[in-house]
Amino acid sequence: MIKNWIAAIAFSLISAVHLNVNAQSLPDFTELAEKHGAEVVNISVTQNVHVDAGAMQFPGMQDDEQMQEFFKRFGIPGIPGSPGQNGAPPSDYKSQSLGSGFIISSDGYILTNAHVVNEADEVIVKLFDKREFKAKIIGADKRTDVALVKIEATGLPKVTIGESSKLKVGEWVAAIGSPFGLENTMTAGIVSAKGRALPQENFVPFIQTDVAINPGNSGGPLYNLTGEVVGINSQIYSRSGGSMGLSFAIPIDVAIDISNQLKSSGKITRGWLGIAIQELTKDLAESFGMKNTNGTLVAGVEKNGPADKGGLEAGDVITKFDGKSIMTSADLPRAVAATKPGRIASVEILRKGSAKTLSIGVGEMPSESAEVAQSSKPVPKAEANKIGLTLKELTPQQKRKLSGKNGLLVIDSAGAAALAGIRRGDVILGLNNSEIQSVEQFNKQINSMVAGKTVAVLVQRAENTLYVPIKVGK
Image (cartoon, rainbow, N blue to C red):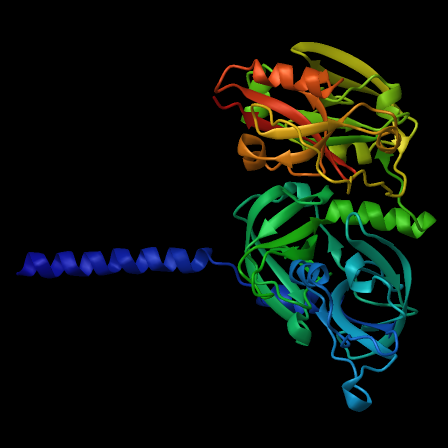
């Protein structure tokens, strides 16, 4: 009995010590909130919107694509004035949204997200002490979602810039912002992943966290435990518009580089090769005879662009750029964009199983533009090949839209091709590492393939080119 009692006391003491250790290991965010809350600002944006008279629209309502953008990026759409007579919307109204930002210099320079101030007619910055200032947009970069604004004020509390490269997965971080307009709200969590690549976001190696981020946090700072800013809260993954524990921040070193360029010249200069790339999957690697998936696959090369002049071809796999190893498709855009235009870069590739090194003069990234090549003609009678594609050769006019390249128009897709995602209107440009010359040549190669073999079909859809792996059936 006494032994059991002593054992119970010992167990209780051990448990108490264990709990105390755990309690001591949890971070205290009170000092961070007290010292750094004044560095964060609330940003209110007003945009003057014109609506065509009599149009069946309602202020504040957007199409599906814009709603998806709202769920992805989290500025709060404002509620404009009430409709006019007979329920018709007014011809003009003011759209309002809210976001966050933080002071990077005591003379009034503030960092935020580009989507917070995009197309703004008026930007109002509200400080921690409730003072309000009309802000000037110095510049914004949509590709990284970073913007720099300026207010006329001095002696402001500024943030301490940290080093996002030193962040570790599992490290505690905190966000301060204005979720749903609730100013100076702090939330905390840990770094969930680093260098995260997101769809359509090629130039930012995002920091993923489980910090509670909601509409209105956009543009606010992400702090480490020492009170240094390591990122800008930019995006969330959500099915409801609210926090689901998946938030993404722009690393502060990326943001500071962008802000310095915006401050000095008002624009961003990036390196450019003029290629379309895609992830090298296991199936694609197999079709190219590769043993691993290291590198990024060149799916298309722009005619007369830097890569074309340097000898790069569709089907090449880039393994190194200017001395930097390229392990995934997300690595290349960042490496190229960070390269000064005019520099001659060494590019290591694999071409049909052989290693080569090219010297390519890096160009300056132009504005985005593209042309769509599609057909609305009736579907002629033709036979489907072994993977389910019914094809026809391009007209001279369609070839001109492809800069004179040969290609085959998909007029019907079924079977393995349809399952792989190829659809009517796509243009087939190549098979594995070979260019396409005719429907007869393509079908002959496909129909001679052994069942179970994976082939890589180069497809152009609108302005995008992509290798699609297809397993040949019986």
